[in-house]
Amino acid sequence: MSNDAPSFADELERELAAAGEPERAAQEKRYLKSSLAFHGTTVWQIERAVRAFTIEHPIGGHDDLVALAEALWGEPVHERRMAAILMLERHRTMLGPADLPLLERLIRESRTWAYVDALAANVVGPVCAGAAGTSDVLDRWAADDDFWVRRAALLSQLRPIRDGAPLDRFLRYADAMLDEKQFFIRKAIGWVLREAGKHRPADVTAWLAPRTARASGVTMREAVKYLPPNEAARLMTAYRARRPAG
Image 1 (cartoon, helix red, strand yellow):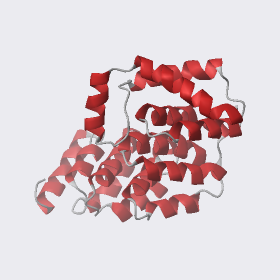
Image 2 (cartoon, helix red, strand yellow):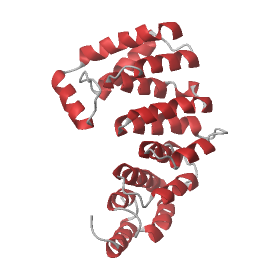
Image 3 (cartoon, one colour):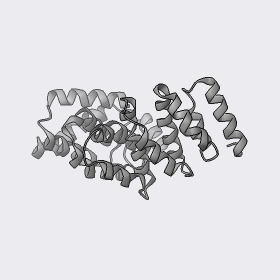
């Protein structure tokens, strides 16, 4: 498939465009504040099309996967970029640490949560989980000047944490970013803490308790959602007492 990747990508786009609606395209373009072209195809429709496409045209291996993802991503069309991400996600077992430069480039070019979150949580996280040589890369991302790359470092920990991985790495990243004003960083910290709180509420409570004066409101509100009600109330009371509302 590698040599034919552009034609396969164009074929998939035609299917995606046929399922789109102009009104939805205009709405999504406004919502995402994007300069890309939009066909108005829903995520569910893109997922279904990608699934059917890979059944009809099986991915032969790593090089075919990367070539097709690159061909899809290379055109400034929302549905093509979503299809590239979903293609990588469906075949993430073909990827490894050597693909992190590619994934980093896609994250840097994303400029929106709609792509960054899926790449970080559903592709980067599983690729890095338990893989040697990835810690330094994620540590670098966590200190990057681009807040989307920093967000990706945070969200890359989401699936490993759900699968029982230690919280240490995420908490180290979160502590370094906790004072940031950037909404997408604040939200990401709260999101991962919320998920961790479903299974390890005591760990989340213990980490958050001495940091309520530093955490933002959006971080706190997300983080306490699945904590025991008395602990959630105690943490929110401490947060409100130590900093202005907002």
